[in-house]
Length: 308
Image 1: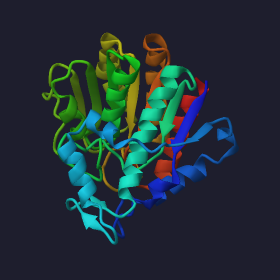
Image 2: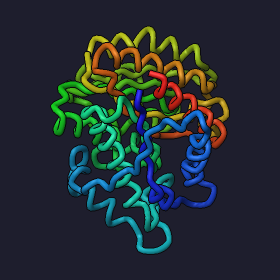
Image 3: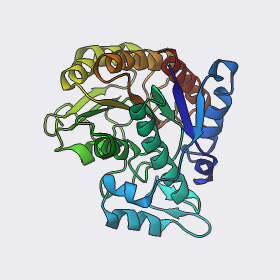
């Protein structure tokens, strides 16, 4: 298997306030762990700068302009209590979008079997018209639309195992039966969405978990609900919103996953991708705020992607 890793130094220049959990050190921790000799076979590439028009695949122009206008020339500006921008934020966001799109291109052209995109800011809380939850643009949604527009994908599945529900991705695809959104997440927890009753056009699959749940709950959710729905949907591409803040060490939530649980979930989705869509998987970094837990989880996830 050829696994491509996309990242870019510009993503370190999205500066957040002191003490903010979504900080540049997250990428540094990932970079360090992926320098181990085990990861030498990774095909490493810089995330390209997306054209601003790519944002319009998931957001209106008025929203793109509003986010761009919020970015300060110096210092820092807040979009909401949790979400801030600095002078480097807009390029970082365009690199995150560009990396997601390039990963889609790679798996559809066969230059890689799968890909992991280690960029920031994350994206799954960004709704059509609202930045929130550390997120500016919805990278997973843009990647799905790019797969459809550029590569003729008829159906795309997005599987989100971040501990926080991806309200933005759900919002964007709420009434679109060509994209299935599946999520495990702790509930109740920010942002307050993600009930099992939220089903959109039959394409939204939420499996909320309770505080204290561990890997067994993740496995049950996948085996009983998510994996059967993925098989039934028969996607042309699987996108993972790979948040690692359900790790037991993470400070922002109370699930108790371990790195081997993320590896297992990766394996299950790889099996389905092998059967359904030519092994095409694109994984995008979302949350994960304890640096050790994040590094261990990413290592387990990427290591499994590489094994095929």
